[in-house]
Length: 232
Length: 217
Image 1 (cartoon, each protein chain N blue to C red):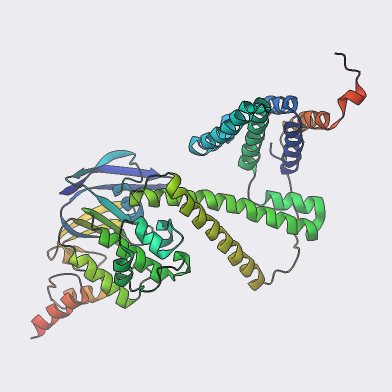
Image 2: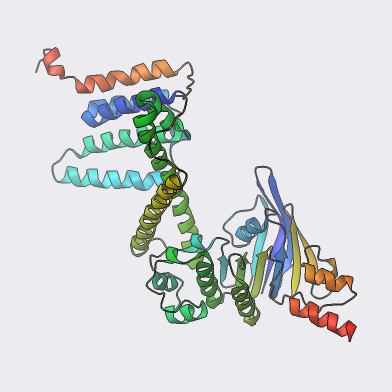
């Protein structure tokens, strides 16, 4: 199972996006500043936008799903329970997972932004597609919900997961790092070798690297553990 | 047509003509062919064709029941093309400017503001329908009769909520009634002939021609 980006080129006005590379099974993190083209790349990978040239080729991918950056854009039903049903999922399971028990009859737009994000994120993850693309999955979430989201992402033991995020505080364990800057996608490589090359590394990771530690992964716990190792 | 005052007035006269008679509607179609950029102002086919199909189906049913189906089809088509032309040519703030020019800073401003909000809502609804289409595609839901009802409910509820939010926002910003703007308009060379030509079918459709001319037959 893999997804190939073959000399992808997409232009809209003055903005151009370029990218090449292969997404193998595992968790990929595409980081970059706001406005660098992450969401556009997500839409291209989800085949919701057509590239000007080049192609996105999926190999042995039977199902794909994109979590949109704004959760309200994913809502198509007037109640939370019906909304979950529209994803082909059982409401009870998702409501428990999203910590929204007894909210099934509520209007989705009466949920707070964070609650709505939890709901859509839970639906997306529980559908468990071969190719899962998460556009800013941690935005609007508090630290507890971010950690829950990270745990759910880490629990996906098969398929391709691509996270597009500018989050720099709570991150999941990942296999590959990519960077998006001014519309250009660059592969940093596999973790942990790619970590020193990662320009958008969060401050705690940068600190650990500056101290001479070699974190195994990109989470705060990994940086802390690496620092403990060198300090005895 | 660049001047929004002439455009809106022309739309009123032409609508009257199209509504009043089949001959008026044919005159409107001819006017539309001569004075508008034609297909460039039409909405995309995905929106326009279903509307035409609905009108055609109603006309067919009417004709089948012995009604004036063909007349209905021509008149509704003329009105639809006219609406598309007016909507495509209207820019942000123009309706407010015309309303203030016509009715002043108090009543005109109120009416203009409401009309501007309505037009903005149309653009927002179009955007939301597009978002829902993407959401349905992502969920693997095929558009159909079963999916239309929840979609329509969600759209309506969202619009009502947005209106409420805008009303609250206006109150928070201290809006009570009226406002002050100095509308400025510009026109191009074709505006006057297009407007004058638009008046003719409008006026003729309102006049009782049988009282003016002695018709034979």
